[in-house]
View 1: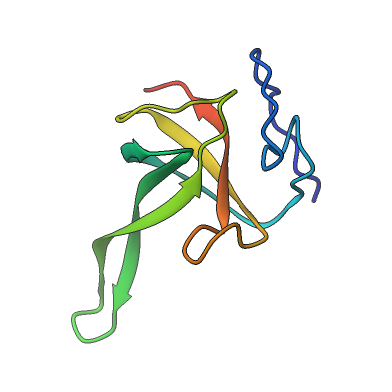
View 2: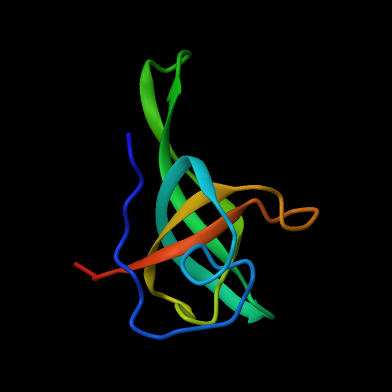
Length: 105
C-alpha cells in the first residue's frame, strides 16, 4: 500500500514536514478532529473509535487524544478534520504528523 496525499498549496522550510522536509511517513493512518493547537507546531488530535465489550456483547464509543506535529504549510486549527500518519518519534510524545486537512461533512 502506497501512502499518497494532496500536497499543500503553501510552502514551508520545516525539516519535519513530510512534503518540504526530510521526514518519512510509515505505519498507521488515522482521521480525527483537532482538539487544541496551542502548542508550537504541535496539535492534539481527538479520534473516536468503537471498543468491543465482551461482558455486554456490544461496542462502546471511546475517545483517544494523539499529539501530532502540525507543519506550518498545513497549520490546522481547532475543530478541523485532519488525517494523521505515523512517523519516527519527533519528541517524547509526538510520533504522528498531520498530512491533510479534510472537508467537513
